[in-house]
Length: 565
Image (cartoon, rainbow, N blue to C red; front, side, top):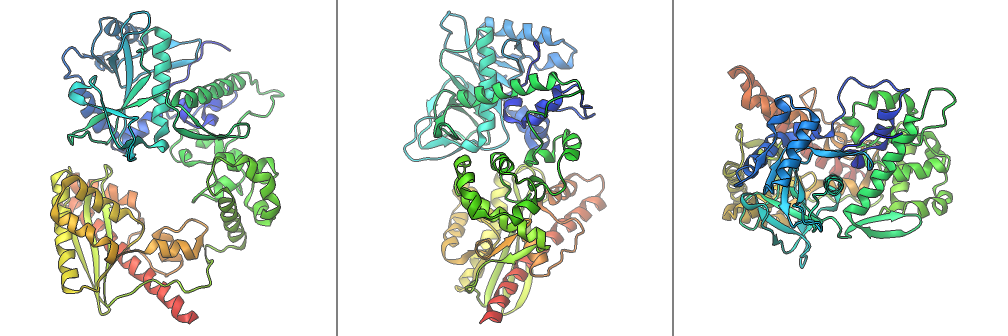
């Protein structure tokens, strides 16, 4: 089979999708398969447009985005991109690279940035991708990354004490794909670096490009033959791309008559939630399949495949299995995961719970020991789809009497207004602690403290920095007590523990963080004042129920200790 191409998302996506795409015996879904659409729908579209608009302001930049809307063919767009690079444009936005039929690649990088010439003396370019998330994290002493301002994206400088977030590997695989395309058409720069413009800032506080060496070995991988090993983005991409080429070739050879078993089998992963191939995969998965039923803190694909090779594919089979007997055959194949034994034991525990119809189970015998105080605050925040905190909700309980306090701003945009809102909450909290030094602030997981510290660090606000100082002595993460003492077959989220353990009920029929983001959008941009007011009330009621649920969980845990005393 020749002449087929895979896009930049194939190497980072589920190979079962590639198999279905090229299998002529499988009916194709009506929805288009384009992973980039999901990122755009999740708030990335406006961010991407903003970044690209700033890049095209570079003197001499070439903007090719309008060709597609004007009806230009793929070949015409290729020619325009090649002409721009041949003319040594400093930046090319929205270009289409020539197909690499030998390498089975097609690609449309967000932008191309002029770099060092190729060995042949032709203009060299680096690919650039825009992503609506952060791609960097702190690492003292690190010097492997560089950065550049969007206004002068070709001018790079070392970015000290920062490293690339390895779990954002997918963006690097896309960039490596585009690099291979640049190589195939003779325009790859002599220096193998590529840029990601994420939700990160340069030293000057402005949005910036993060430059990564695609040949640098820093991605920790595991294989049965080599064990743990650091590999580069190029090595990771080449391996994944070759496998998907093999999958596509095997799929294309199918006729529907005496075909061998598929080279890949459907396993439910996170990606299935938005994949339009799910309607094809779901009927092929057993209703009791481990990947389907153990959906919270699930085993990954390699762990599941290892169990399958050992004859275990369903919850019923794992529930009856002797884990101690499995481990000598299981662990040599799952060394890519830290705590592989603990993860298998946890999966087996959940399988047994499912088999017995138990949803939440205590696994400890000692006292749970949640601290209590005469003055308590239960805290919960709400964020919009771009991560902006628009609501700080607090339930103040003094000597058993509770009152709800909210600090909200139902309007689009963040920036300084997000900081000002956080300061209003921090002022209120400081007053509570000043009057009641014994006060404790309860939250469920570190979501609230992470955002508080982020806003304090970004703004330098004295009020927020003072609130951060309270975290060590006054804040209590309730989730840590639940996590250490319980196992939940569907995880240990607040909704699950509060309803199945503490017996709490939300007033809204569809409570959830993602739903609240939709309500926020309607509260901001609803068609009528009545719709906006109703959405605002719904969000506030949901948030109040969240903090009351936290209080209910605390009282339930305290009651368990008292009953066992």
